[in-house]
Length: 383
Image (tube, rainbow, N blue to C red):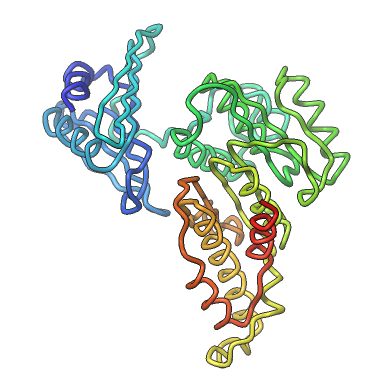
């Protein structure tokens, strides 16, 4: 950790913009840690922000404490550290064997950070900075201000980009990234992914948005051409039958209705996708199947049965992905007050498969036979 300690000794001052610790080494780590300098009672501190579900926790440290804490976290919890100051950008990686690699690059000098302790939350796409696709989608004005009635959409886009930021260290660090967005719809998030990866992260990225609505695809294609997004393509097509690629880095499926989500997840697994982000929708399949004598006293209430069936559907999907060799988390996408469809399944390829026996016992107990396990078994048989 001496290489990291040396960088921190030089960079932990009022010129620091942000440090992000990412790439969790084990499942007990709630999420990324973000660090910024703040001024309290004329003393410089470093504030650590940690997002755990809906809640965000903060802790403040002096320089020496902060330096030791970061080294401890990098040794035990995280694989990657990204540091940016007004003049420098550093990247540190810790291998499985504990070997530390640090790369630094001087950059064009940026403005000093706002050290105000109570400054507003900083989004990946910041208010006040014009983003063309947000203007055309009615989220932002030409002056870079967020349209008041569309602020929830602005928050949703930024929250989704945070999920992308979390899994970015698990994707190929160099070369072209291939992303498939099944059921892209109006493509708020498709454009956001391209903008984030290509414009903000300077990655070579190819994104394909797929949807059945021809008018929507035509509109999105026109906008992509307008912005000069040469590797952002929109196609009319069905999730189950799409065969346009053979290898994919990231599969995104947002609000694909009912079993369309299952077809998308099965496709992702067959392509050996490095990561999957899925927000399921309209989970009707198990609601018509579930039969469990033990649970009958509560399943007799239609609304309760519907919600239990939806939760069981997504839980079984998550477990299916674990049996296929993914590390899976079921996370909250956005606040319940904005939409009831707020579960996001995030899966990152590890190659470590879990046993299917427990999942089969659970399916037998509920009396259900969901689609995804059978789709994955069919693909295994073909292989």
